[in-house]
Length: 585
Image (tube, rainbow, N blue to C red; front, top):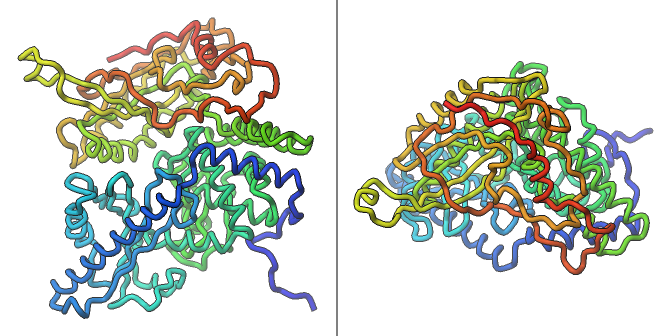
């Protein structure tokens, strides 16, 4: 009699379960060496420091939990315990040295959400490695969170109070029984830890999964696609997509998983969902497009595996999905080149060189002629971090509003440019003194591509609505400024262009994809957009948050003779003749 026991992970049988070849192994070794050269692996000392930080935070949480128990008349000696669980990239062990720490505090019911955002937040602020102004409670987020910076490490602290007098011993976050009686905020907070634990159980080869996930995250960052807040690819999105490929190719080497990632999702028929496990039982909180009209509107569902299942990419809009698809297609061609080299017996140096092409910075600042530059400014790092978090959470809506089918295509770049400027205060200007105040700025860029028939389009309503929403933030402080300007390609800050070795270029001087004609002779589309939304001083020289990976090393070899055009030359050519400047108001 046929057995009904499944011998595979996932909801469908594997596509290919063959063992990796010698070429696959060599290709994977070259991939790991390339990733290490980028510094994406944290040192043992860094990991130890991260563990100490989590232990310190848990101690603070235990003390707070006991204080809350005492406030309600109990004895501190008999206080129930709470527990801190890591999730995200740290729990999956795929974090970079500068990654933040995602943790959820699971507490008994005497610990309330108000106490969490008030008394625990104040307690954390008193820590010497945190300090005033470095703790930011975000109560009204989709998943409420306390954001803080301890030393140089950012922490996102979620809260999940169980409807129990005491936590079970031991605490099993995968037990669906602990979800009983929880509100949606607590369920979403707890789901982060549940998803991380389940992902490690749903992939057939954890080691291959981790290497491939590191590669995909690096690729997404380099292409300006790594931001769940902006409706692009976040960490959990990447993890689920890579896990899906691992299930389809259970014995594949890491390099094969990366190559299949691009092939599978370049051809994926969205909005068909990506799922790792069978759907949740009938639960009103679970993602279910058959029952929930709102779920049916999602463009690129990437569904979490833990009950209740949720769409981790619910905020992906049409312009974001278009950008992801475009880069997936380019990534597919790059990984095919790596595989061809491996099959032809290429040397490790040649393979590393080919992998570096996959991780090269995006052509975002070359492919367009028009950009909306969104400058977010504040007087110090902590204020800038809080102000940026708020502005970035609303920037996704501006991108969707600017994107007008048949007229304008918009694309946002997830890596902001960070700069500092010395500015003169009013008192300094009167006294003729030297500038004293430092203004810190993060600049986001939204590229605009106009259809050929568009001669004029008014973007002012989109910009004003965005500005009004952002500037109405209740926690906005003096010095927090927002400025939106139209920036033609020729006027982009120099730091937008990462230095690039000539051998990394393909030699093509393609014209910007503005729909304006390849020869640039047609009249450029003009657009009305406010040049300045809030008073803000002109930033001086700055630095990029994430530049290129550096020139090729001695280990690298070129696939051919040096290309005739450098990166800077490509930009210069593609900007001539330049588009007319947008009208300003």
